[in-house]
Length: 348
Image 1 (spheres, one colour):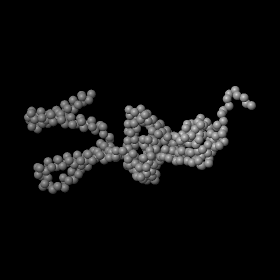
Image 2: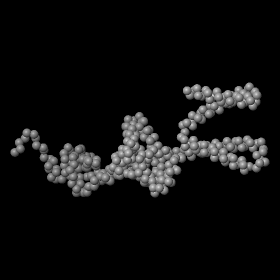
Image 3: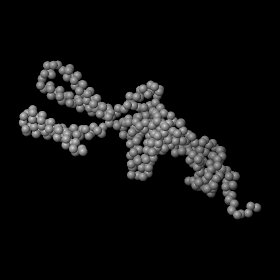
Image 4: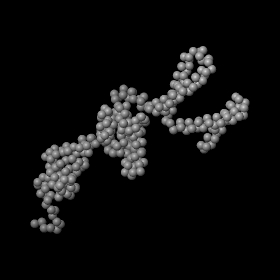
């Protein structure tokens, strides 16, 4: 179908070129040259039309606006030239090439500015004026793959619209198409979580087309977008958190929220834990609370697989989480050391 369309275009453009040259010069040889010129113009038209189909509408609108701006500048410049100068034959060539150059520059500049243009730029002043500020939350790739943001949204503690930029979607798709099975599963999980969030009636998830072609790193794009929208970045990336804070962009870190919601324990507090495995140091045992907090118990290696009562000695907060250091209670160690009665044994 495409080759038939191309044949018709070339036949039409070649026939028009032959007819124009033959009528102007009344020479069959020049008519053949006109036919070749028409075919070349037809090929250029076909290549241009295929290229234009791939361009976004805002780029095309920007190019058209730039073209009209360049022609308008040319018209104003020509009108400012004295009539006596415009009567020179050489001025026609100068006017033609100058107009061509201004039109080309207008198309290039208009297309580049159109690529950066977004309807959100037009709506931004009205949004700030009506609401007194933006409450948008921008999701980064890591927090989407993590998945806890969907559970937090179900609780209703985070309000406002969630924004997912197109460059984050592209990164998710790139991870989902990775030959590495682990990365591929993580990318697909992120896409599934994002789709599930969009289907929830109490959430508003918008896809933003805003991009910053001059910026290559995704983290830098996120910071620039948050600054432009006056929004906040939701992440669990420690490095992005620090860089955004240095740039004055507010950040909501899921890991910090998780650590803040863990129960507070004080030195001397008692708790009952189940020793699961041995620790790194000699005779240490390791247990875990329901929220995943690690509990290190001194002199508890021989009680692996048992429940013991321990006393908190200190709490260590790290970037990876929180660790609670404890020691065995004397009576707990004694009770745990007593062997379980054997079935069928005498009770007296």
